[in-house]
Length: 285
Ligand SMILES: Cc1cc2nc3c(=O)[nH]c(=O)nc-3n(C[C@H](O)[C@H](O)[C@H](O)COP(=O)(O)OP(=O)(O)OC[C@H]3O[C@@H](n4cnc5c(N)ncnc54)[C@H](O)[C@@H]3O)c2cc1C
Image (cartoon, rainbow, N blue to C red):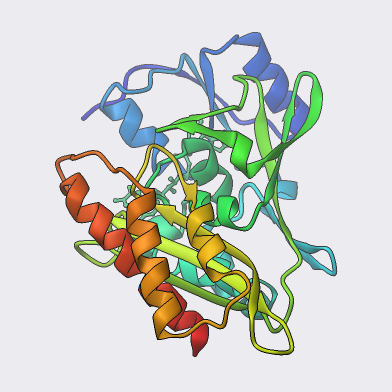
């Protein structure tokens, strides 16, 4: 399908990009990898009068790893994450999730900022951002704003970003070397969006009891969800078969996914329990 007509700009600085978005008062949209925006324009779901291409903003392409955690520039692509061997120890849960994102061609262009701004409830990265309590830095006409992941996603394809704001960075807290983690996803075909997935991690005390459990799920609500009931079932206990059965039941009980063209709500409710079970088994090994 042909795209609707639009103006195009390719600024070389963030402030120029923000000025363009501000001047168009909600009628302009940033373009990152184009893997979601361009199809949405083709289907007339989005019709910006101006497309502001971020590709020349090279400062948004950096991956920084420091004692305080991992920071991904908004224009970092899926491929950059998979190619950066440092991330396999600096943030293995992030890498495990990105391995499930789309196909080779899309991973070459799609970006982390675009994914988070697009806010698909079945997308992997928004789920990881919520599970790991990442912070999103956005720059707009009012300056830089730091948004907690939990406050960013407000509904399907909806975020708390203002029309003049550009995501510049996603900041993940530090990842301890001995942390246990798991990621499990079910999709009809490899690379499709998840029907359901679970991302989780916990730390262990000297007696092998879990604490600081974080459990996030995608594909079962209007946004990525943290399942505190499942976290409560894990914290303070050793992770074994009995605990995993309880966590699986708690995960299914905690969600009420609607029916849609891909699966019934009842199916996803059962599936998310299985995803938590598998992710916990991953974490134990
Ligand atoms: C066939 C197919 C399969 C896919 N499968 C998956 C999958 O399994 N999992 C998955 O997670 N994704 C999947 N995707 C989506 C893909 O990962 C996209 O790359 C991603 O959702 C959007 O990133 P983008 O860089 O392409 O953003 P764009 O398409 O350029 O932009 C998406 C939206 O974000 C806004 N935006 C972009 N950058 C910024 C920024 N820095 N600040 C503020 N707003 C911004 C745009 O204005 C637009 O509204 C798939 C896409 C396709 C076409």
